[in-house]
Amino acid sequence: MTLPQAGPFHFVVLIPHRDSAQALEPYSRKLFTAGFAGAYSFPNVAPLALVSRACSRGELKALALNQRNLSASGRDGKARALPPQTVDCPSPALSLFGPLLDTPVPAPEEFPASAVLYRFPRLILCAALLGPGDETLTRQAVLPELAVPPFRAAMLANMSLSPLDSGAPAYSFAWEIGEPVWLPAYKEAS
Image 1 (cartoon, rainbow, N blue to C red):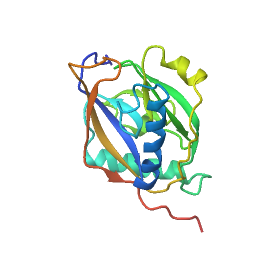
Image 2: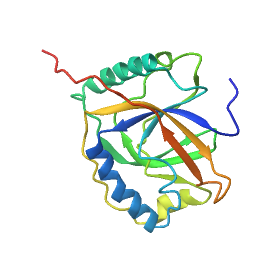
Image 3: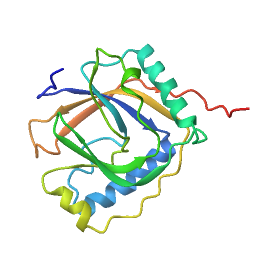
């Protein structure tokens, strides 16, 4: 499948419960202060896949169930934030920086076969986009403390990302997040 070169770009994203998402906002603010120009260029979500089209509500529900099962396997249903990492997206050419989530990404066969263009290898809760030269910042800057509480409650949603005509191309995007689907409630094994 050919990757799109111009927007809008479509993603399926994991959205943490607002308590965890709110904990990431001060982190993004501190990254911006430390010189990360892309700290406000992408929402605080974790992309699962770049897709050719928005997923239907039924497809999102199936993915949400799968994501819940992945979080339940040896993790008591929680996603935990680990030290920040970078993950690349091939189109648009983006690098996302933020805490790694310890929950796996659904297997390729769990996504709608006709829709997936690129499956992210790991879940990064985006705190900033990295532009040219910003990778050096991740090694040289004194990164702020990160305190994102573990979370069970999360949603999946479609997200579109459109490049803006003005501003720095590496950082200038507008996004829209569709109606979310909650992950099913976690039930402990008896």
